[in-house]
Image (tube, rainbow, N blue to C red; front, top):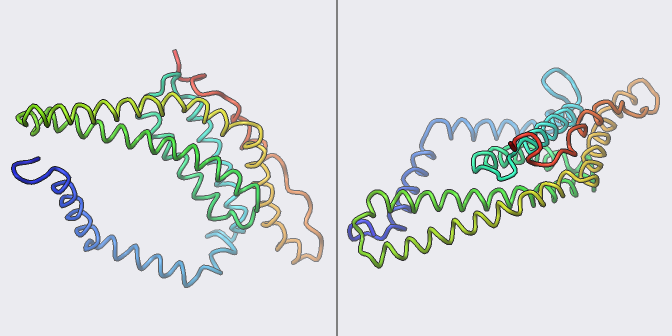
Length: 239
């Protein structure tokens, strides 16, 4: 408790105040306007990018970059990952998942399989981050305003802190296995197939305009995207 107000109520009221302030902010209104414009012009946006390039080709390049950066960052994680390393990796995974899910209909089953594996990795990283944040919050409260709390309350908080720290350690120990599965041959092949299908989708309209069948897309982009995926976490960061 904080005074006579339960801690959970105080946190909820603080979060509610921040939410209402965000909804009243000018930035939120601008966001809604942009979303409306995007929805009104979704057919046009889906066909090409700002420079006239097919959207599927832009998506293939975005996916290649996102996958390469995610693999590079994951390979640099220490053998015993630091919280900030896994947090940064979670953000990278989220960016790649956005691309996969947005253009998944164009790539079919390979995109859905890759997205499921990525979701499992992201869930583990998200659960770990939740434990780290919860433990830090309890520790900060005990070291600060909760220092004068009754002994029974401190014991309860200590038990909660220990539970979150233990949960976080278990999740961190599972990371290496989950990462190895995500960067395995099946995942790499699926991402390569997604990139290939997106490039074919981008080539089809161009082929129709010149009255010929689309040829096989270049494989260089696929090779670049999958070149670093096989590295295990800890290979670059441990030491």
